[in-house]
Image 1 (cartoon, rainbow, N blue to C red):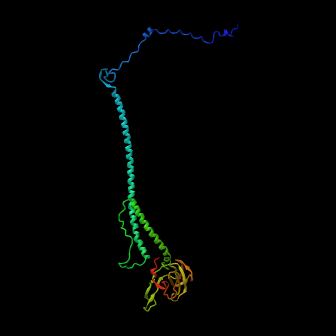
Image 2 (cartoon, rainbow, N blue to C red; image 1 turned 120 degrees about the vertical axis):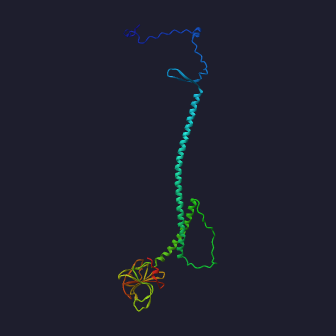
Image 3 (cartoon, rainbow, N blue to C red; image 1 turned 90 degrees about the vertical axis):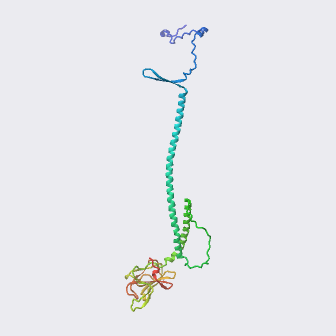
Length: 338
């Protein structure tokens, strides 16, 4: 039988010896059970134990006052405090909300007042504009009268007619009514202006052909009509135009667009030019020193026709200017406005 190696060197086993088994405890006997202490029974609280006591003691330890308070009183006090604080929180929240609402209301009232001021200003301006537009009716009537037929006296039995509508004299009560009334007035006057613009567009050509511009600028030496003869003798003669004072060589400009009808000598007028402006209107320029256009030339308003002089039957440098309508001389001043 072999022995384990190095058993002597180890001297003893490396494992600790197993613990000894504890002897089994004997079962408790009935006497032992009876000897165990019985825990004390909880006794019901007395009437005084259900209260809180508040003691007031002096510094030397002598009791001065004892106040017994039932348990329900502090509980009720705590519950009441909680309810009070909750109600106070609700009231404070409502107060903050009311303050915020009042602040918002103040800004809203300020905005409403500002808007009311704007509305009042608009009403005032709209009323002024309505009165101004209403005044256009009289102006339109005067303009149309110049282009319309002559006004003649009518008999009492002259025929008239049309739909009878009562005049609307009621002032507009609301802003919308004011805007509607102003819109209707502006629309009415706009139609009248458009009709007048069409009429003037048709008359523009005729107006442009009228000799309204002065051919030269200067003092009028002799007017249109009957006059004493400048050649002496005390005789009366008819002067068919006006004599405008001008130095020799002053440019003579066309008072309106037209076509040169004549350019050359003309008996008593010396060198002269006649311009046809259509519609039976012609202009004549006499006593010229030099002619710058020829017969048949188309001229525009302001075109230089000639230079003033002293040719023909003339006592000095000037321009003799005539306006003829259907071959008959008329007063040039009736056409001159420029």
